[in-house]
Image (tube, rainbow, N blue to C red):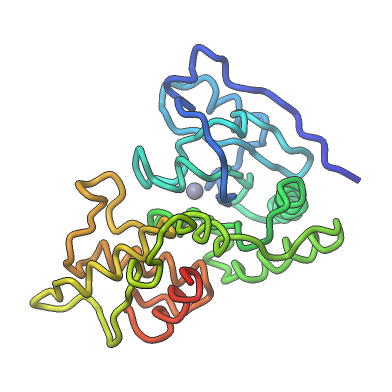
Length: 272
Ligand SMILES: [Zn+2]
């Protein structure tokens, strides 16, 4: 049975503050509220306060409430004005995470079903589901992370999606492919260096680092989204390592922020 979404949308007069940009979503981002408020209270607080912080859905043990239309962006991932998380992802907050317990577990269960439903509606796979941490490193969803259950939650979403008859993977490869469709020399555009690249002193720099950064950027993993040239300037610093880490986390690789053969192979596979 489909989960009914209760709408309590932010007023249009607040769009400028809460959701200024039209959005064509490509991801779903999972959060924990780090609070013990109900979904109704989370949404009404978000709607009525004067902070820009916003999110699309809050889920508690009883219901799913929507505060922002899914065709507008919300400010929930801390990756900046032009960050992919903020500009391309639907934010889902799971309530009661501060204290946990039965109410939290029920909220998480409902959120898992709801996210599966969103994926099904969009024809997406579970590979579109991210955690807030993937975008800016914030320790969120804190309870899922501290309990070491992120993979379990994703697997549960995937299982629900299967029950709904949805696709279990999509997507990012095809997103990347779309971007390169009109490029005549795909291979040379995304040449990738061999060897190991990481943060060290003195910093590694040069054309090979730029190649890594360009390839990551095509897949929306910018070293410093919003900075000049998105931080792509051929220096392997902490921000590049962070972009590599986010990429690794999305594709099930060891999250060490070090570019090596496995990260290279994954990038190549996606950019082919
Ligand atoms: Zn969060």
